[in-house]
Length: 203
Image 1 (cartoon, rainbow, N blue to C red):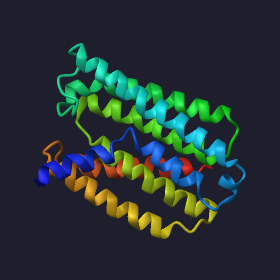
Image 2: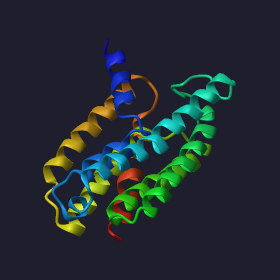
Image 3: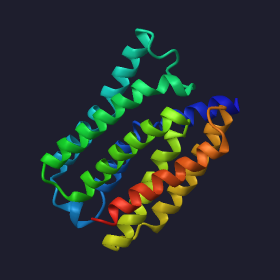
Image 4: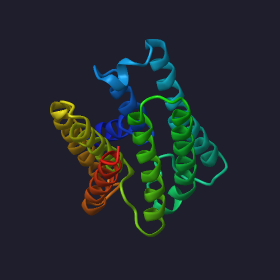
């Protein structure tokens, strides 16, 4: 029962969904970078990000599974994560480029650039060692919110606290399903947080 709940948590907070969650949160904030975007355009941006960064990579993953390049959709083995990670990095950079082309606030495409860079870092680390993409992703969200609070003086403290709580739950879930060791979980938090935080500090 606990393992089933852990897998559900892993699906809800899948790394491919995190960029959509983060941008959706930021785009409906009562802040200058969100208020200048028309309401209908906000949903169009969210839909674009969701399709490019989640739907397309998932379609590629299912295709790889169908043709035997990936044995399991859970990708529990480090070796079978290589090609899906390459596809993810490509689509994340495409998402960043498309949003950058819209000329909206740099807040959004900085976050997507951070996600793209982290996708490449995850890919490179995966060649030698298995690190948790889930905790890299949620660590990046904490880094983004923390960076925006520092740079733009936004009151995100409660959101950061809730995200840290969610990060703990996600890490526990990944341990529960036996996908990662504690060192792989903690390394993901650290990598995700510091890469995204450093990038936002250059905003």
